[in-house]
Length: 76
Image (cartoon, rainbow, N blue to C red):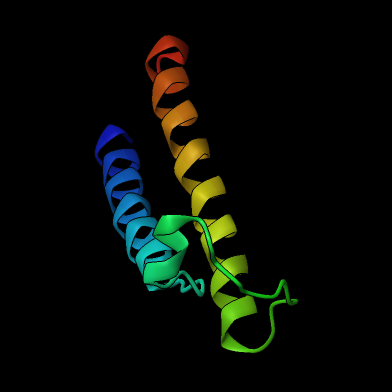
């Protein structure tokens, strides 16, 4: 059971990192100097799907860590 939880934790961590890096926000060079000039719009299409996928993977990541903490104390 511990090996399975470790694989799930590592896999979800890698997927979450990749999903976060794939998300794009319109931050250009001007945003570093305080003048971003971008409009706030709603997420659509692949951007929305990637955002929701990131949330799901983050929840799986946190639950797998909590489960790996609880499993040894339960003796499973």
